[in-house]
Image 1: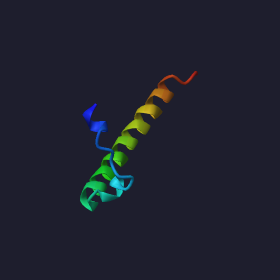
Image 2 (image 1 turned 60 degrees about the horizontal axis):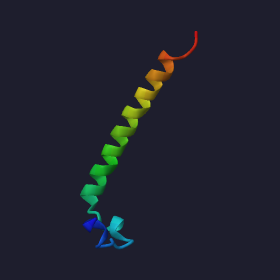
Image 3 (image 1 turned 135 degrees about the vertical axis):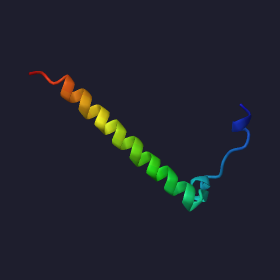
Image 4 (image 1 turned 180 degrees about the vertical axis):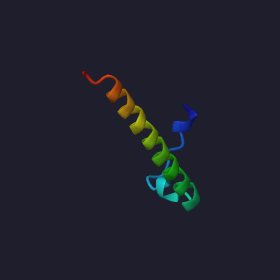
Length: 49
């Protein structure tokens, strides 16, 4: 539980460098698109005919 002994400052999220932030945003977009297409595929396959 040592990670909880040093509380992060509330603004720690804003200290992310623009490069890392951009990378995370791109990854989130890619993951979101993948999840949406998987969900659409499952919905189409299980759709009652």
